[in-house]
Amino acid sequence: MTTKNWIRAGLPALATTALFAAAAFAQDNPATGAEATAEAVAAVATVDKGDVTWMMVSSILVLFMTVPGLALFYGGLVRAKNMLSVLMQVTVIAAVMMLIWVFYGYSLAFTAGNAFIGGFEKAFLAGVTTESLADTFSANVKIPEYIFIVFQMTFSAITPALIIGAFAERMKFSAIVLFSILWVTFVYYPIAHMVWFSEGYLFAMGALDFAGGTVVHINAGIAGLVGCIIIGKRTGYGKELMPPHSLPFAMVGASVLWVGWFGFNAGSNLEANAGTTLAVMNTFVATAGAIVGWTLIEWLAKGKPSMLGAISGMVAGLVAITPAAGLSGPLGAIVLGFVASIICFFFCTTVKNALGYDDSLDVFGVHGVGGIVGALGTGIVVAPALGGPGIADYEMGHQIWVQFQAVALTIVWCGVVSAILYYIVNVIIGLRPSVEKEREGLDIVEHGERAYHS
Image 1 (tube, rainbow, N blue to C red):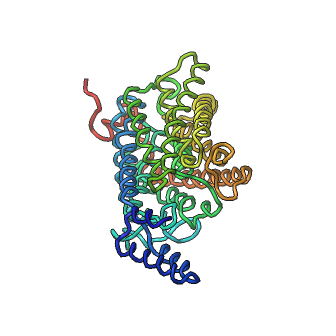
Image 2: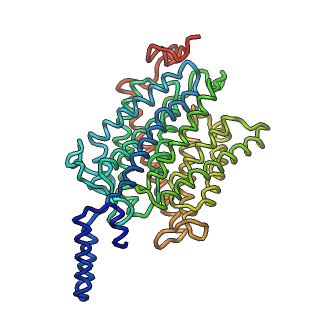
Image 3: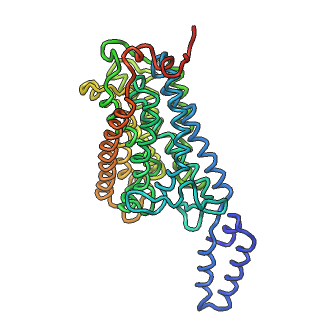
């Protein structure tokens, strides 16, 4: 990096002066000057205002994904009598998760402990100040630790909120809140630590997960599948029609998710540079490919393309490209989105109907399956021969095997621990309301209000 680049990056005047002095020393003392210059460069960490601004925008975009995006998407897909209950669940889960992240979540996920979980050295953000910095993916380029904490906090907030779609319309509000607290503590934080922390088990193994295919989507999808099986089917499921009460709301919510997902994916680059633009590009085209894929397969299978299918494909594409957002070329991203949407369609229809589980809003079928396809596919599309940026010592077969191990560990860890937590919550406060309350609707029973009064 040239001196000009360092100045443009916003170095303090003192640091710039030190660099010039080291350069001058190098000219006068060629034997030792190069070492002095290297040491001076290594000693200075740059914080660019553009990176900081982008990370603040990205964090706000991920919040936008959650409230109102996810809330409206899920709310529009349930029956009218349960609309407010979904909005309330998403909103409160996000708020509670933000507080827990500050209390101990950040410390467990992103401090040294062991290969599976961190410690409590930064509990309640101990030692974090406006002067402390967090690493990015470029040497000596850093961002304020506070904005890294905030960005990762939004991921922790949305992930348990994704789970509730699997058992929407039939779980107590108190049970959902308690389960979410336990789940992030014993499932999300360990997986985040293993995948994204430098000493984590899967990180050390070489698993690739750019923005959360394993940490967010497989995690949420498996927890949702386990939950909908343990909780049981909705009263009247398979005997009564349960169509979405407002596809326009669902479409608006899905569209907000797409917009917010640019913060989710491109923000995960932690800088505003060329790698970020690749993640932006892929978030556009993979999603477009998935919308087209789902629309086509539904058209062929059912004779008519539906709005519900289009927005399902939209989310499936976003899920699939998440682990590969900065690790795929645009053409690979299109193929990944297209293929993932067709596989997700198959699981949301044929597999779901054959096995008979009641995944209300297809959390497993879209997030779980889409996350698995995306995580495994990342090992393929990263290949330079396919337009990907490549990684050091890349060998496709080996990388797919590593990706498979990461997927398998996430499924087993999340599945087993989630099942235990559901049973614990059931013993403490019970998971389901009575049949009578469920038929009346969770809006009035749980919250004393209705979404609509006409």
